[in-house]
Length: 435
Image 1 (cartoon, one colour):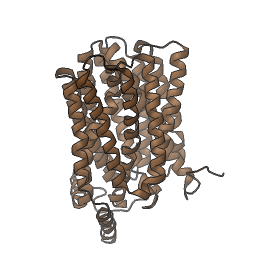
Image 2 (cartoon, rainbow, N blue to C red):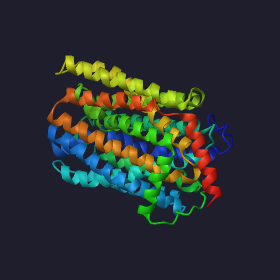
Image 3 (cartoon, one colour):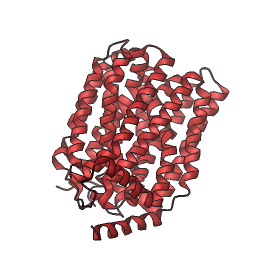
Image 4 (cartoon, helix red, strand yellow):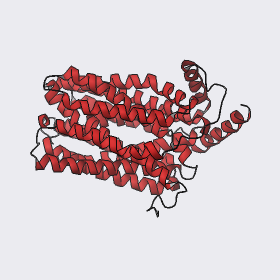
């Protein structure tokens, strides 16, 4: 089979494609459940009160992410020690599919039941993301890791684009114009995820790992060792601190994008069209990153996207400060392009730098720690933004959101890429040689 670009130049195109298909598959949960439709269904239908809905949604997201924070390094350590990354990945996907389908059963006024279904679904989705990322170093080399990471990210946005076109056809064709009519779409999201994960289930190979002294140690012991090993990789540790802070903002935007769009007057089916625009922008950005990130450098790439985030969130803050009630809808359509650019580039770049700084024999372990950091960012960022928005107001919340990216950029500037790569390779040589 002759593979199309960008797979053609890779030595393992089939496996990279299968890995990327999982990214494409889980977009149904990222977009339809976390970002676009379910937050409004939960707020408007399941809860039926705007302020209470904002508070409960942020609390539900945060609680699930705090649980993931506790589980991520333990699951990563167990996946390494039992050579079961693929098995854990498939189990997390199947579980998330089942709970996603159950979201369609949530009736009006059943907000607490909605949380009891959403929380385990989000836990399984987030753990699966960590496990998927841990395959990256085994699928790539130092020269191709940025390209392959961005290929996966791009496939995710292609999946999102396909999903949103399908949802748009259903919403406009069948007249599903309000959130109380969206429950069948949650079933569609589950089916999409189930079908899309099939290639990874049958094609993706379990990464080869080296046997180390602590591979079969108790989980808490391995967690302690993971933190110790990460601290020794000083540049990785510095990056994770910066990632934690700007992750506050990224996770908040993912969880509140639909709600913020509604605050700017984008309602009902227009919200689907807005997200379609955002996804197209993000997909194009991810494609460009795949082509140029390895050339311009991962640190410069991340810093550039953080500047875009600062401008986008700062613009929302300025508009809300000047026009607190009924701001012009077209402004948020424009700002949405900046949000799409930020989402399309920041994730793949961040995932890449972790792979560069992680010794190959501890990749699942360190990606578990990376996932823990990102989930902790979501737990803290979403909770703080949601509660400030619900009880203080939009302007204060947007000010905090912009500040996350400003501080994150300042911390990122302290990270040194070349010393980080050298330290990871040196650790590989020392630990594998003395096992």
